[in-house]
Length: 471
Ligand SMILES: Nc1nc2c(ncn2[C@@H]2O[C@H](COP(=O)(O)OP(=O)(O)OP(=O)(O)O)[C@@H](O)[C@H]2O)c(=O)[nH]1
Ligand SMILES: [Mg+2]
Image (cartoon, rainbow, N blue to C red; front, side, top):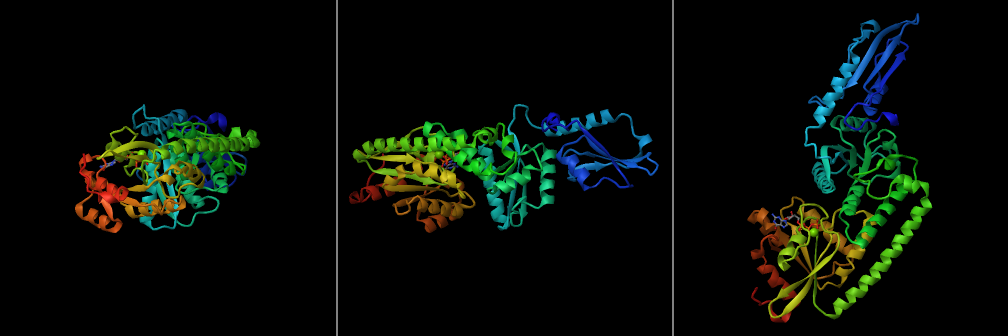
């Protein structure tokens, strides 16, 4: 089949013609092959007792349609009545597929993905989780064309029911999706069984997060951390005999180690892990040295922490008039960035922006997080930026609290900032302010910073009673 893959947008150019010994129509297997192999057509020719051909049962695929019909089963006709313009019929069909899928600007060559959530959570929880996966996909540069929720315990082999998996793959075929992203972390057995059904890229949530990190890592240390996390995550998933990962030739999930490279010499991959870990350690001790110098200057350290996309970088930018990358994407910031913040009376603090938190943080990335948060370990005060306008603000709060505890930072004094106050109504904000003892701010608007500055000063220089006019 390899030679007949003509890209996601077309039928594969092969027709499956076979005989059925009794007067049986096309069966389930025939139709599944038709869909998953993207055959031009599947035909079963009835073999009569005398050996002569009887009727032909035929089916072909259908482009995406409102009735969600994957294929068209044609009326059986005698083999002598088959139309002889078959090629032009297939060509027209092929063009229809291409036309429907190209309904987007030609320069848009993002991967198209179907998102799948399989869980026994409440529907709202599943939808929230999918909304976040959608954001993750968007931040990774993927276009989401469809999403599916199935409420059941995840199947150890196929994640979803086998029938539902087939339906999902057919939908992907119809919509021209190249990627199926599962909203959970796949086991190697699941990757293997799903891959045996399809040549689509099969990814999970962690791989999307790792991919965003790979795209955003700019410093040497950041790149090493990400490669290390990718290797650690992928290596155990290569143990089963499967090919899903080798299909990650490029694009999403393809930045990082490919399977062939790893399979050729797994020991080399392990050596690479050892070597990278060593380098991370070396860079870590160098950083400690640098930090030592800063500590000696004995300026108070204030760290900005919070869920990803909460507005941490926007805040540091507007507090210190600097230009840290801030954008509407998850994990825009990967490396901690420090800036000086001047207070009146010649006082200064070091303000540090950090990488954002996210729920179900992959374990392998937690290591990378730990190093970037070493610096925060010396902070005198944390500013916890909460996106007050987000629907699941409480879950985000819990997630950040949990991760801070894991990083042993939960005992630090902390000011909670209710950010994006411009997008909240007053009542909602009041409720949150009471619940979290939070200070409402709008990180985009410097005129809202005064209560924050006062609270910070109260913490840092209690003797002056926070009674400091802002600049
Ligand atoms: N409406 C509104 N938008 C805001 C506010 N603060 C930040 N944003 C927007 O929220 C988005 C995320 O802001 P960032 O500052 O990049 O968030 P972050 O917490 O640094 O995110 P990561 O580094 O990706 O974890 C950007 O599009 C900001 O412009 C605010 O107070 N109001
Ligand atoms: Mg940021």
